Amino acid sequence: MIIEMEQLGTIKTPFNEIEGMPIQPTGAVGVEGQIIVDEKFQEGLKDLEGFSHINILYLLHKVDGYKLEVKPFLDDNTHGIFATRSPKRPNRIGSSVVKVEKVEGNVVHISNVDVLNGTPLLDIKPYVPHLYEDTIDELKIGWFEKKHQNAKTKKSDDRFK
Image (tube, rainbow, N blue to C red; front, side, top):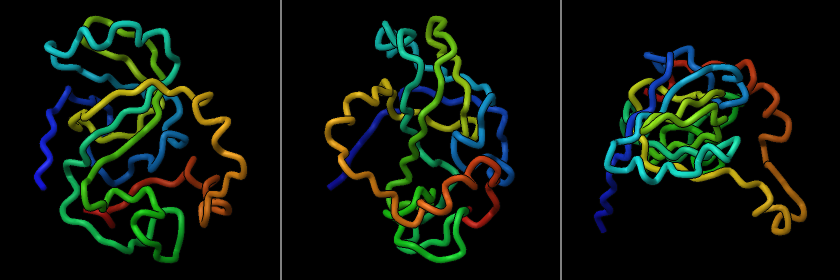
């Protein structure tokens, strides 16, 4: 089956190289960027400024191929790709929760962004944690349990080019 998607816009950030980037938004606190939405989708931004955070979905456009087992940035052991947030995914879809600073026309000013400059935007969804609170009784985060705190300082290297 072939699935087609349309690029909704482009994400602008200060990161022009994959190496040295934060690996998660928690390591990008204060880093500013913009989402430049194609003007034909600008009307869809109505009321977005009422949300403090959004979930952005994007194409990991500089990643070639995929691996079903990877050694993620936060661990020395290999894990199945679907048990990681590694970019070396079969469909190369990335996801980040970022802070909305303001919306001006077709530009969404954001912060806490951990995305490569020029990344194609696939979708924007408001971040509403209350939608999940009644569905998660006992949260488990697997191997991340003892590693997630390192995401604040860990930077990307060249392992997923």
